[in-house]
Image (cartoon, rainbow, N blue to C red; front, side):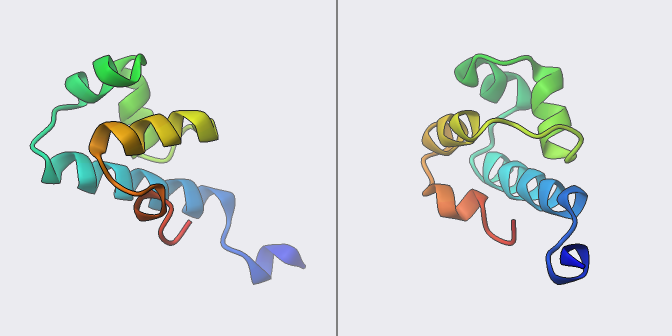
Length: 78
């Protein structure tokens, strides 16, 4: 089964969230500030960082730009 070969979607979203949160905290940025700059709610940032929602690729690109990191940093282990 493909599920055995690849990480589950849940785990991949969790890793994305961890990467975003790590970069945000490294820049001493609040969820509120990231939300404002990304034009999303603070609750959405929280849900992304905990892997509970799947952001669009365009939103991930926006977040990478806001955090001033290469998108591959956010996609590590995803």
